[in-house]
Image (cartoon, rainbow, N blue to C red; front, side, top):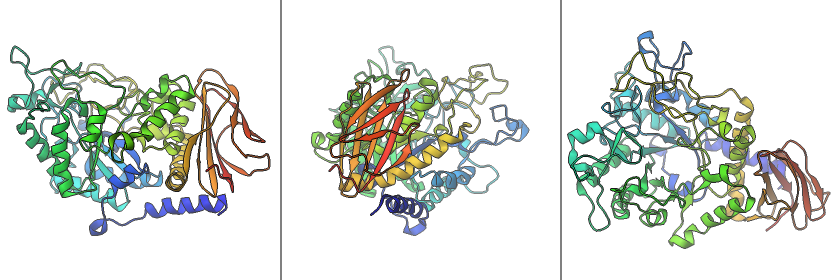
Length: 514
């Protein structure tokens, strides 16, 4: 099959996959997709996802009739995500938020005040439907667009919840609830340890699983997963899998994280979480911004490719280059870094992951940040935010930037992922030798075509590099997916003039590196 037909076929697959009809015919296949590295996950804060900031001041002014994001108006953006190639939504927490000792004027999404009800802030008050039905309609609409939905379970509880149910929390020597890390708006939940788990908290989390399954979600991302024992998670995951074997579990955990969130907290390493039943974890791809050599990227990819053998069953990872806990890539290393992340997500053996606004270049700079607020809905009267990170603390604007070129790259990269995942399944993935330590190169290849990716991790200096490609010849036909200056094809190598932070993606027709 020629590459043009191959690309056309990939586009058709992408189109058909976004035209699926849900309802009684929808079947959860998220876990299979994830384990095959074929999910394109897009994280959203429903509270801001489709917020209506009509006066443009960045804050939702309810007294002026403005509307924050809710389950019902979120439905209107699903076609947009479908057209961008998104196959799964990660909803940041939709549980009620604490209002006491809070951060921000709406309260942090991760300061859970309950685990068996939904956040009333996400209800469309113009609808007569109860909030659970509104959530179900949003999820059903996502399924109608063949988009799976992952819910986020907070790892800690709010002070409000502590006041109601103190038995769920870890106490210090003076009997006070423990503040984990520097998260002053939450308290550490007591899940027990490997010898004895806290069944009171386990039952609370089971209620959460029941609620999520009742509204139709396809999987759960566990916040600060390493702060609970493996035994706790195994019981919970087994509980969910009895109801739906395809139910996905993603751990917020990393092989580079070694410390507990508090001296009073347990710490469960990533491998123990995977053995407990989690399908995947974050890995350490967020360290890309610090890596200076291509070998660092290569080592981490190879490390994760061996996960299945290490754990004893198939596991995977997300491209955690840019999450809601990470500063906008544009602020970290600029435009080329953002583009690099898009194409790495598309072509590495992992599940693509990005945050609402990433595709259009939002820097998450809020001009009102950390100023005193005229109106608050918590006991905090400041617009608390983390600079350069999506707002999870206030009723604020819809995320989004103004770099339309990035959106085109995002769409193209996701389309390529459809094709490259088929090639991954039936072909080979391997790294190629380059002439400069700051660069990397790898290929995905089957009997009909090869995708070759070449990149420069030096974001301050360009470089000329030779990439060794066995059997490649000057007359081999290739098609460009992303680069500024065309490379030169010589016998047995590709010569590239790479700008700082540039990534090149080439597809060779009728050329195999298997």
